[in-house]
Image 1 (cartoon, rainbow, N blue to C red):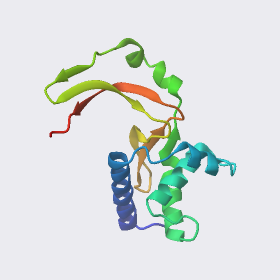
Image 2: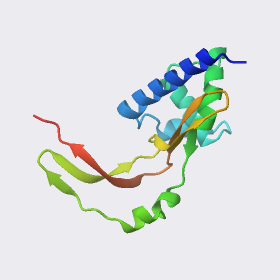
Image 3: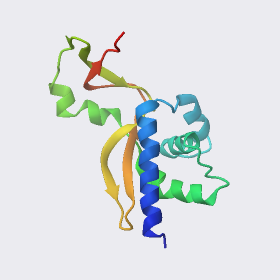
Image 4: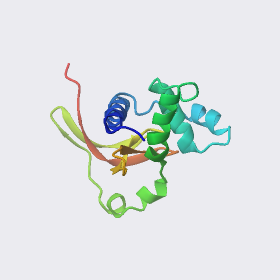
Amino acid sequence: MVHHRKIKEDNYKIFALLSNYLNKAPDYVDKAEMERIASYNVSDEYAFGVILAAAFGLDIVENAEDRAFFHAYFLSMIHQLEPSEYANNPYYKNIKLPTIKMGNSELKYETYQPFEGFVCNDIVQTNEGRQIPQIGFLGEAFPIRPCWKMAASG
């Protein structure tokens, strides 16, 4: 049985790793690497997780603790999503906002790139106390809702 303190430490660890990834390099996973790993007859979700684990410095082959961490979080955390579900969403179908510029700020549409990670759902809490973030990715580029962007000051 895993100790409560260890689960709490693991929860902090997964959120710190994902925060860094999502804020600094959400497009880290690329198609060629995904295809290479998926060629070993694993799902795209598993391949995505293996790439992230390696990027996070986890050795899920030789290190038992890293492997246990991977299995406790990554397998239920990563989801390949279908673009059609988003394209058919009433919000995306019916609400269109124009691009607007105000000073150094701009409201514009952004695009998720293939295999770019993003938060896709609420955190799942397990019975043992693990908090598992939900990370999604799409296999193709997809325009997303408008986002405010601040221009870099010069």
